[in-house]
Image (cartoon, rainbow, N blue to C red; front, top):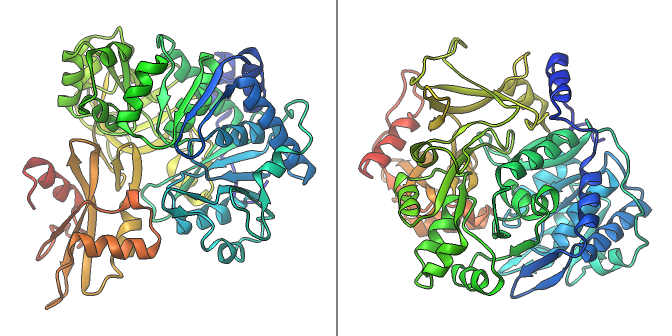
Amino acid sequence: MPPDLKLRAIPPALSQRYRRDGHWTDETLGEVLAGALQRNRGHRFQVRSDIRPYVGTFADVDAMARHVAGWLRARGVGPGDVVAFQLPNWVEAGAVFYGVSFLGAIVVPIPHFYGQREVAFILRQSGARVFITPDRFGPRDYLAGLDEMRQDLPELAWVVVLGEVPSGATSFQAVLDEDSLEAPARVDPMAPALVAYTSGTTAEPKGVIHVHRTIVFEVRQLGAMQSHRPLPLLVGAPVGHGIGMLSGLLLPVYPLGQPVHLIDVWDPAAVLASMRRDRVTAGSGSTYFLTSLLDHPDFTDEHRTLMPFIGLGGAPVPQMVAERADAMGISLVRSYGSTEHPSTTGSGHDAPRDKRLYTDGRPLPGVELRLIDEAGDEVPIGEPGDIVSRGPDCFMGYTDPTLTERAFDADGWYATEDVGVRDAEGYLTITDRKKDIIIRGGENVSAAEVEELLMRMPGVAEVAVVAAPDSRLGEHACAIFRMRTDAGVPDLSSVRASLQQSGLAKQKWPEDVRVVDDFPRTPSGKIKKGVLRDRLRTNGEL
């Protein structure tokens, strides 16, 4: 195991409780996936794509995954080794995820829109031995700068490319020509299975470590919440991100046993056409996936009947969106979680209407939740407090041990850095975030990362990047500058040009630029970002 992947010691009493209550199993991720793929071997696995469309069965994808595992094994990759991939929502992403899991290795999915800067950091910090990538997707050339990047990655032994293969790399087809793995490897269920990278309060992405037990429980728990869903879900969220990975690659296979339907570019017109043609549902996930369909001129009453149940999470849910769906006869529920603790609270579709539409639900099975003040004491019902949680699906630490130490206390409580209010019936409503992040359409954007790059622009004295309300995406990044005397004022195009040159992913670029003479500050001189956010929410002005 790479030295960075160190796990916290979970309190023994907590571990015993999770096992005694049946929350934890000794089955590994590879074992449950292999079994489910075989049980449902005739189910469809379909990818909608202008570049790499695919229609096959679970049996076909299982065979591909076993060749991936066999190729890795033949090169000495095994349990505890790290395999990273950066692929769009294509069948190869599923084959790689499943194959690495079969081998008992550690899978590191990377969102396909991450730029070279983020990818290099993830490969270096995780100690990845293998990296699997396309040659290009849309306007992005994934191979540009690859040779330079590899010079600083001593652990990276193999690069596998889907498409045009450069010197020093291996074609994905050669991987599929390798002898296949017969059976999933047996590994310690408390060993790392997955490292999911997420942007947060730090300038660099944070590596979130899930062991086999935590991720297997998560898919079981989330599957129980979605067991009512009558139709398969068409997933456009990137499988390199937690929401897309769970809803696109894991839940349909295990435990729902439903076909997999993916689309590599979220095109509402194409999604609506697929819904009618293939009898699939869509719109769950972050708020944008729902509103983009409801707002499209092709949306009809037939589409409404295909989406009777919608679950939203991963981004703020404006009340007007929830009320609009409800008025259309769509049962909408909200949930709260994170990459670290994926399913913390949620509501069932049988919950009272006001709870479904206006709260983020109650703690899910096995989850404990406390709302505390600065002294660590629980706050009264109806009062805002810092949210701390623990449960059998809570992660086991970060790739950076210093972050792990700050995130957990001695009793295993995880400090979410979110603020919420709980009512007398136990329903939680998120009211604010202490994390300095913007949740844009379900994707976390680190304000610190963007600020660090914007400070390099000429004439910038200070910059604050904060969340501004967005009716389509929930939130977007607003960059607020204080300029040096006589310096020119940056506009949105110059800001985006600077970030493009730096290699930052486009999804993280600000969509609004403001300039102020000075910022509201704390007595110690820190910028009061909460004040800036409140002003933008209240009247859009600073």
